[in-house]
Picture 1 (spheres, helix red, strand yellow):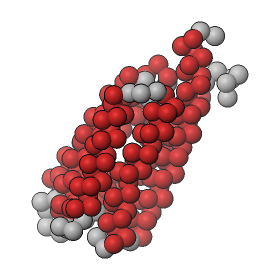
Picture 2 (spheres, rainbow, N blue to C red):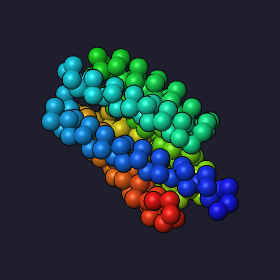
Picture 3 (tube, helix red, strand yellow):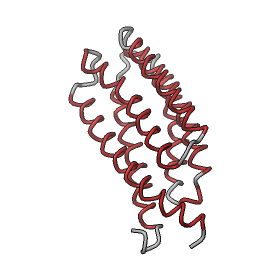
Picture 4 (cartoon, rainbow, N blue to C red):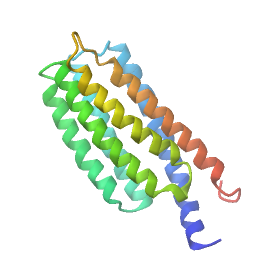
Length: 183
């Protein structure tokens, strides 16, 4: 086994576990958003702030697993800013939340696309790159949706589910692409 194969073999299982965890979080989070009817009461605001904070935690785990990556450090900073922005926007109403969430989705989607492209050799990254591209488009739609009459937060729950599914697909692909001796 070459050094690259050994390194990939050690990283892929850890990323796989992280991706499964991100899938589970996204599904539970979206379920809670739907259950609260996406209101901006204390629970709703807490939920919208928790999502980018979970993204921060996942990026920290990713860095510890795969090593320092500029994109992941930028993602941590952007997600922390998003959490703060969402906490403030929560007091201003749904349109403000959609604008902040949309801006975060655009920037974090671009970062996800770049990080996934840099990890192509690990395998299982095409869903991550596709998810990053879709996140950019979804973010733009959230910003545009903030201007409609009676905007709703349910779209961000759907966004989380779709993102979770992409993490699940990546986790499964990472498992299939590992050498049998590593599984």
